[in-house]
Length: 251
Image 1 (tube, rainbow, N blue to C red):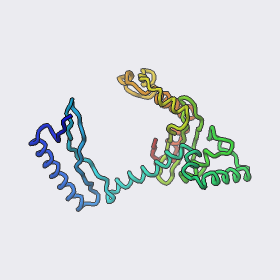
Image 2 (cartoon, rainbow, N blue to C red; image 1 turned 45 degrees about the vertical axis):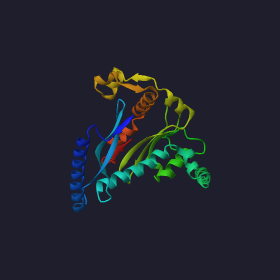
Image 3 (tube, rainbow, N blue to C red; image 1 turned 180 degrees about the horizontal axis):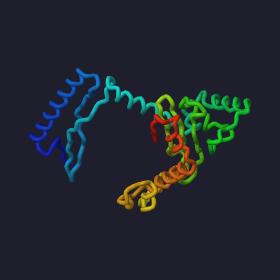
């Protein structure tokens, strides 16, 4: 296929000049103002019939001098650890090949020796308590900050954790991704499934969404999580409590 920067070279040149002027103006301003942001010129490859061409676009570049940008990066780094912790002891041991088993075994022996009981809000942990222990060690939160954890896994059933991150003043709902054979079967159950009127009504969606198509496996898993949250009501209870009145929610 033929390739060009634009359908018209003159149009392309004018576009580039306009973008360069805007970038230079913005970047000059940002040097004078620490809270401003910088822009960069990038090109996006587009295809139309047998012709390929590049469309110039402006994208924002995160700045270390911008407080909001630093918050975004810090929050992303923090909650990526929470997302990884949802994979519990398997990932913990895999990422700590030399010490992982020893750390979790020591935690189990301490728990047994001190006759500490497993939390009533932790479901589906193994007899050694490795799943909960690996979550606490990975994130660095207290046991009381785990409001609820369901580690059961089956077709359409995904493990999830509700915890409190006091440092970031956030209540987090972490849902584990693909790890088991059951998860893989859900992944490949890709037949399109409409939302339907009942689900739209229950979730507060507009009726126009009833014919929107969804990945069948992902929809089944999402419905199970939704029903679980409604059943025990712990997430709603935490979000409306006085203790966490100023906390945000992250999923």
